[in-house]
Image 1 (cartoon, rainbow, N blue to C red):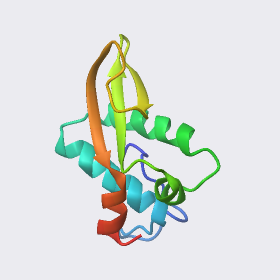
Image 2 (image 1 turned 135 degrees about the vertical axis):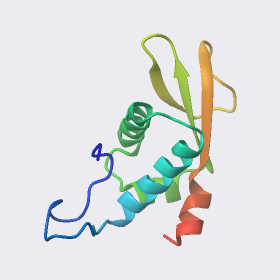
Image 3 (image 1 turned 120 degrees about the vertical axis):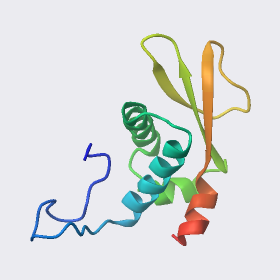
Image 4 (image 1 turned 45 degrees about the vertical axis):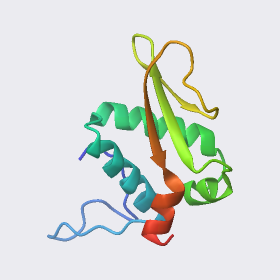
Length: 113
């Protein structure tokens, strides 16, 4: 309902609620599910996906994760208003108040993508 996932084709077709999603959107759905397990708000999920989109640049999300040397994606939250960033190092950045780690390579393997 918040538009965090983009179906293939038109959103409102027919009378049912079936949607078709590409592989990148399936991985995004898995990331969102992991976030929901930790009670991350939808607004924060949106910010995290925006940061991820900045990192992946021209690559598809699946290709970006496959080519990444890190197994886990670490999202840091700092400051007010909150600023979200992807952390590439092992430690939390100075001023960070929380860190969310999601094993994207495991998600790829679990989803067989």
